[in-house]
Length: 240
Length: 255
Image (cartoon, rainbow over all chains, first blue to last red; front, side, top):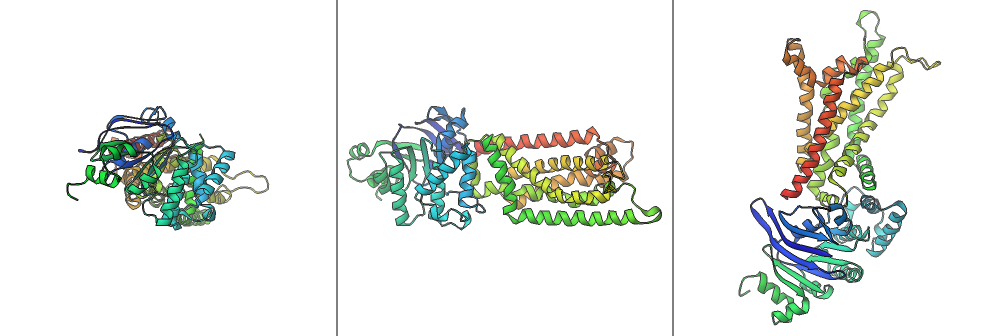
């Protein structure tokens, strides 16, 4: 469903992504891991069509993100890292606007908005201004927006960052449920989250893929039970 | 088409959700109201001190355009600069909508609000046209009115397109407003130079070609549709919109 081949992205002279390749088959939930500044967000932004790659190829459901941007984006529900929202709009207004942007018809719009507000526990804040929402609710609105057009692929950039433990648990549960219906690529720092919600993982560091495979395969390969060991071994300095 | 309509709707209604729209509307109405009062005063004077062309007295003054130049930047400053600043541009540009549709949606939204701005001034028309209430005929040629409005519509489009382009270049709304104000003032300030130039020389012709107050003083407010300013307004509009689309593309490539 998601295919990335030799992706390169330069910010001026600085190579943020240096030849990343991986694949996410249909129905798989893949954790995208790496330290801060490893190139996770950049890769996801290229997949979502917010940035253009300097080199290499990426495609979503068979549509090249550069050559057929609209077709590719129709297949993606993307949630950016900090969940930017328009503070002056109300939750339902915002979702209506987003549904229109994604080309949903009037009848469908209503149905999908009812569905996503139910699904992401937004029922009690439907008419609240986005600017007054707490971090947890903002995150849910972002997730609801990603789900609006019922896309086959979900790309979530740190969906649990800045949430409290209860919210993390709720979001994780939601992600697990969504993983049954959607192909998913989600980035995170929280390794226990990957172990709970994902089938496999891609670990990147300094713009390069360090490890790619199912969680069991990665653990066996590095002869350890914890993903944290592997993560530190691949991305940290020796002796930490 | 649906994404475009959704965006136009949001941009247009967005003006009513923020104080900027109301503040702009207020100051615009104060400015046109003061001018209207002045014109009515001139029209009712006895003797030879009156106003010959009421619309020229309204829209043909350098001062009017000097004040007016502040309006379009206020309407366009937030369009793209705010989205860049707060990061919502990321959600907008990852939706299945083309870059030209993003630009068109924002531009049309701004133009619609600009028309709303002018709507209340229609109330001055019966007096300015010396309308006969019983028969519905006007005392002067109605072309003065509708050509003037055509002029402010086209000139407004140009200023809004300039503002939209500037807004796509920066992240700060205030900076966007300042730069687009400076750019809009170019088309107004040159009008102050006309009296000092030899009317037959090429500098005067160039200045008159660019000077929006001169276009209104000489043509639009007298019911004349001169194609030169019309071509200028439309081509600057098209050029700026094109550059805005390109600037969105460049942003994708850079970062």
